[in-house]
Image 1: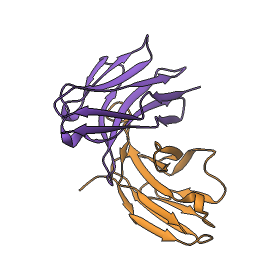
Image 2: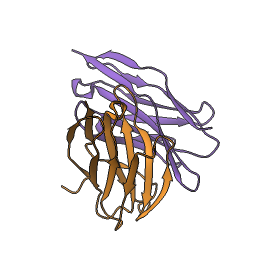
Image 3: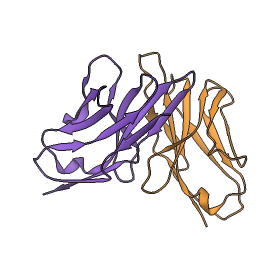
Image 4: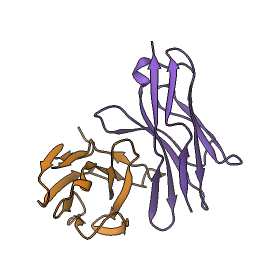
Length: 115
Length: 114
């Protein structure tokens, strides 16, 4: 399967702990995005990479959140000192504009529960 | 400012009847528009996209959407609903402003009755 993959699929943690999620994009895609989706809402943009460069960050991305894409391939999203309000589905998407309009393809998401 | 409004949070149809999911957008730039579907416990799947080529866009599973610039709308339709269409549908606006701003609507939950 050559789709976007995310690990882990589920994460349960205690408040105050740090968590890290991984996203592996479609191999030829140079753009990678992170979103957060809470129950009953549409996904909200968090951040965007083109190759290894982080080009946009949402105001939702507080200083407890950090994302990296060190070699322009996989990406990690870390949340430090988790809070109950961080409980959500974290979605990763990747895209390339080489085939025309930039179209994002989504992974299955990582569901975070903060107790 | 850019925004996306899905006019119905829930739509209920009977199997075999038409589906209409409404989406209006606001953008100062020429947007690309998308519809995604999300089945329970599954990832977002692209249904179709508008890219300024043709105003009537055909997607997967018999879905279509028509871009109407004068009405700033991009409604999703299907002639005949199937039980498997029951899911959450998201209208998405993507604007190239140097970066790529992507805005999701709040979603419309489609229920299909037997």
